[in-house]
Length: 454
Image 1 (cartoon, rainbow, N blue to C red):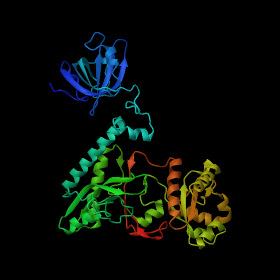
Image 2: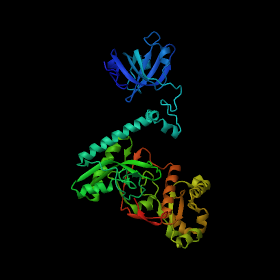
Image 3: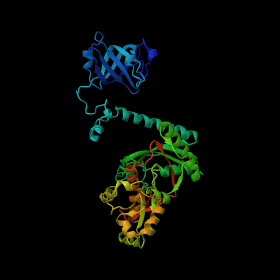
Image 4: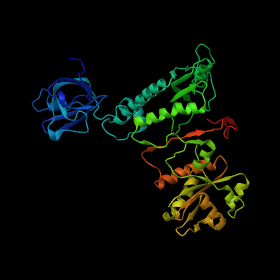
């Protein structure tokens, strides 16, 4: 018999009843049922229930002294559970192991661990990072690491089947501007000089193409000295990096889109809506969604109503427009019934976020336009806005007015906020799209220079 195990903790079934087995793992849970002790033994694969009967080889009292997360090896006999004790939620829920021999491989001495593994309770981030080895034992995080491995494995297989070859590019390299600051590594052999960690393998993959290789990919580590983002870890992250020779934009779409459909179909229960993916220009995306990565599950469409406010009686907007500002409208369907408090709170929220505010018009059930802006704008202009935005009686509309690089961003943020509060975002689906015709450069206000836009 193997020194540590004959089976893993997710393997034993009813057909194994009567077998002598050996298992190793962590003590996950304990339950004392009056003279009989049950221990859930956990390993990477799953959980098996161990039984310590009152007159067994190992007494319940002795087994109960073993603390949570201690590592043990047990030998015992597989038996079927009684019908009432079957747990259909566990792969091993039809059996249990009567323990005949137990070895403590690694005993936990602390009565209370700093991170409790057998619970979903949240712990402070600093504690989780300090005791990362405990944190990663928890089911959700453990499964996330496994999922990441499976996704990367699937990417490799899919890309290879499309004729791509995987190459590893250098990590210690020269600085190459990619839109963020470099991480620098001092050179021991060249005092006073530094290597830069790659922000992306851009130059290396282009070098591969001009060297005659046709299709390259890599699960590439990227290092960027930048602040944390909602969709990216600070400092370093991994990306699917690829390059193709003699390729058009459509060739790239045709290589990547099937991969995305495959991955999200395989690893998610959510439905993919809209295949082939719609193509949206950067300009249209910023206009309609206020973002270059729009959430298409959100049905709200932003409209430009700058001309409807130009020269109008609403002087606050009209004066800004004369100085180059624009106005974007965010519809709020069926919101009139929510009252002015709903609209005023968004105005207050905008100010808290650092914007000048957020104007609005409410079209009541009779179709009358109400609110401070409506009074100064006049019937003709309010009707035009209603038509442009596709509004109906009982709807409302918000307005973001500002510079050409500020108003779209504000409108995009409140498009999301309004949709979430009105429960408009479609659940249980993925809606992908391609954003095309990105600008190469943009003005960096902080540094007062033209910078890469990616």
